[in-house]
Image (cartoon, rainbow, N blue to C red; front, side, top):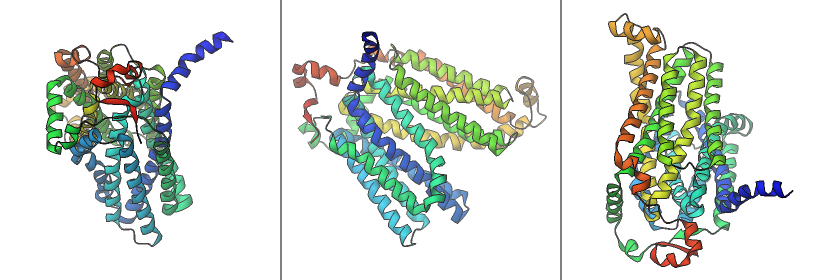
Length: 465
């Protein structure tokens, strides 16, 4: 019995340390899933009424733009104000948007531009909510468990993306748009409740910071990043992985459809989603590596090799296995970059840093669509189906014909990953980031040594009111 108890104690200690975060995370899992269901339903509603791919694409554009355009404001607000209440207000505003949309549906007044406006509002709320949540992890969870917390966040995002279309298709036929909107209202309320009933340590905002202008705060954030250029390198690595994922997404459907059925495509995409879930859960259970930068380099190298394998062979089996392993490793890489930023960035600057990261990541995915899609259709596919000298030389190794141009693109994406890793390992400010930049003050350290409270901007005795 004692042996069993001793084996359980480390796990129980982790639960104890992460209890506040887990409470919030559980609510946000419901909120994110409800939002994904509504997003799928609105996409279907717009396409069925317009049959326009452009108007369908505009839905995603309006949902993504706030992350990019409002990044400076979001970061400054997050660093200035109570992060718990930023999350509460963001969820409440999203709830009001859903309520307004439900009234329009109820009175048969819903128009396409209402959907665009709603997506812009929801994107704005999500930008504030996600930035505040990621910046709060360093206050809610001690350093040794932050990788687990970020792994659970990756799991949350992955589950919402998988369950959204699956449940959305069922609920849309079962309870129609009105029922779907009511369902999201319920999910948002579940997400807000934990934020209302708990109190967690918050940043104490200095009086000088309150009196400073937004522009001064923005400049101070840029100066902070300029002082530690290794952090900028870390942000760019994260953004590059999102660019790769966007590129893979735009390549996968035409690549598979040319040689297989829609059913096979669905199964392959399900494998990719399963890879994301497994990778997220793995890092949530395994915890932190000894050296984050070495782990990040290892992930980018392996991902580069996997993309080379995916493009080299014309076999769908090889492609599916390689990209599934890529999607498994990607949340691990994402978690390590998030955790390293939380460990190294001063808590009073984390809002600005994470909002910039969100903006770069948000730009990278459509950049993959815009750049790789036309290259595949207009350049690489025609080239690998021609009888040119270059096509014959390359085709000796990877084959020629339909799909081989997109395979070549995957190989180039993998080679880019290897080059990025080589440059990142050569750049000393990034390679030595963990040793050159001291760790930010840990919330657990402050609990143990109260005398440090006077020399830091974090006030553990002050709980969110």
